[in-house]
Length: 127
Image (cartoon, rainbow, N blue to C red; front, side, top):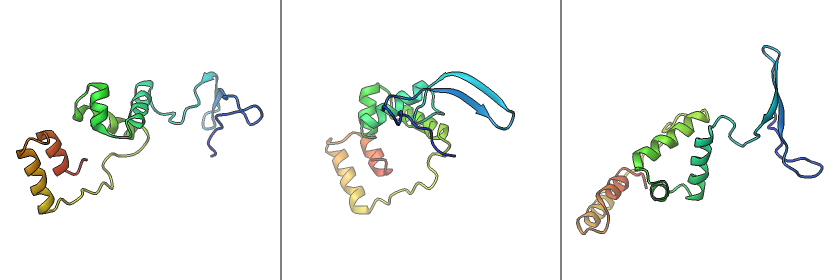
């Protein structure tokens, strides 16, 4: 199945989906439907994705912009990933932290140059 067009090939105006059809039960639904890039996402999830892109995928920037905690943002990201038909963390490779890097992170924490949360993220390979 081909992906639907989002712009008119003649005048380049935005196209509007006006008919949906189910070949399994021969049902047709007519109306005005959005023609977004992520059709399975809710409006709230789309806003989250837009913020994620604007923040360049940096969760620390999203924490500041959305005033949400790191775990809440990760949970919302996982919801979006599932809504898109994927399983979060699948095929995720946890980077190995060498002894030298681990020591540097702990020294940065001890010196007060990074927070405990930042050290945890670094040690777990989240940043």
